[in-house]
Image (cartoon, rainbow over all chains, first blue to last red; front, side, top):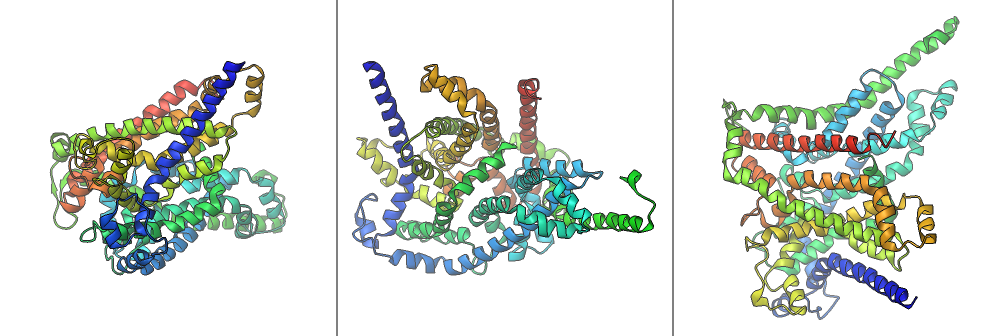
Length: 281
Length: 307
């Protein structure tokens, strides 16, 4: 019995040791950035990176980074992009899922498969020719173009919506049809409100993804003065400012505050959204 | 439906308008997503394949070269050699999956502060790629964060390599950032899978006196092996298309350019659109092949058990 007790103690120790160790690994790079962001130039030059700053109220770096990287404009742009992308992709995603789930017609399976196959093609591979198409459509250096691209490359959320429609009883639509309601009424007045949890979940995930997206933003919003997003505004720090890490870290921290707020307030939805998105594989 | 139609003319009119309405709804609801799907997936897919047979830039004239671009993909050291780098990323993702599974198992049972640990480990997934790039450029700089922590552990700075410059080690450093970013997300997926295992199984096992390790081997693993296998295969295809860490941290310098980084360079800097397209087609073929193998393996293992 005594041996067993010791065994349990060892296991409990290992358990918490592992958790603490990996949490430390996850947090260390971020914490070191926070520490550095509060240091003055002189402090940054003379102390070790892990030495705590003299004052935790030195926000000079944050102010400077915000101005130098034009982050005010970047936040406005990112906000506009976010609202448009979420609104448009939610609307077209739920509408498409409604038709594919509720209407039987020739070509239904084919359309589903076309979307499924699209998930297999890695976005970066297609960029070579997408770039040509965007050029021909004059959609480079245009917020609208970027928004359209971001809506057009979203496929996964359609699956979340289709899954959700499967769980909504069809008799609901049918009785509404008997009552003489049109399809638009049924969709907007009856089904869309029921979809709210799925919409919230996929909007949070999609929202974080859109906010963080930088590859396309960098490629298609080339005029960094007019069209910085929060992610691309950090590019300002590549080049001459490249070793002023107290400034860079401040910029990095500013850029991840919105994600942190969303994470703290919507943890449950983020976890469940990830899990439900992956189950279908 | 048509059989039950009554002879009443009013009903027929109603049915007719229903049919029209149905078509209107279908068209209005599907037209935009289908146009977008065509414009940003299938049109570029087709163009990419046709571009791959030409020597061309984005603007200017095209010259048909047949399979020459494909030959170059396999001959040029920078193209095909870069595929070898994906082995580092495959190794990394195996490490990542192991860590994630281990931590998910711990967190699936009662743990004090479990949610906080989970939150800490998951948060890196929500940081944008550029920020991750800066964080790790800073982290790996000579004498900075990583070196400082290693010195706390008793290492001597003089014996430590340059994490991003030393070609013997820099790919491991980059893979490390990718593991850092994604292990928490993998862990959350695994926790979701473990939670969906019937909890009465654990209770029965406890009564039978099975310890935690036995529970892991005999209850958890068999019940979630499907999602484990799926993630292993996803990580293989993901490794082939590894892109972000070298793109944002080293820009592919010092032998860290993965296949996609080189492709991006060839397409957008050197403007060799035909060659870049051929590279994309080759990689897509490999990924589609891997996916096909995955489907067959799944059918082989699960075909009889399920349904």
